[in-house]
Length: 124
Image (cartoon, rainbow, N blue to C red):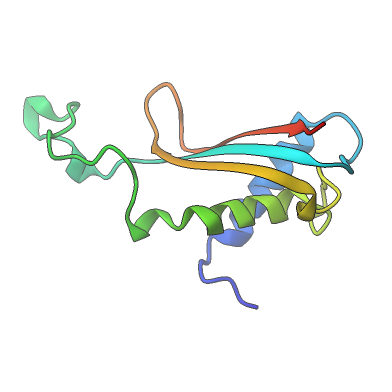
């Protein structure tokens, strides 16, 4: 299979490196719950101009729900592939160990930069 996006390889490498830094234990080989929120930059067109350049337009959408930001299921699959044993820095033994999955897409804010916030918990 060939990935549709040319950015997937870099994205997975970034995820693997972040997982390697964040997880200090051994590979998780049991059922896990994964909660992930992907944060995307807002387009400049969502903001006003001139003195209103820092303000969102009333017409700006609340959620990144167009094709530009990708499908939630494909984003999750890319993330899970990156943290499972098919990667160089496995966090979980296999993505089949994921029994619960919550995926959200949001626009980044000043407090939350672009990327993904991931929480993995043992189930049981």
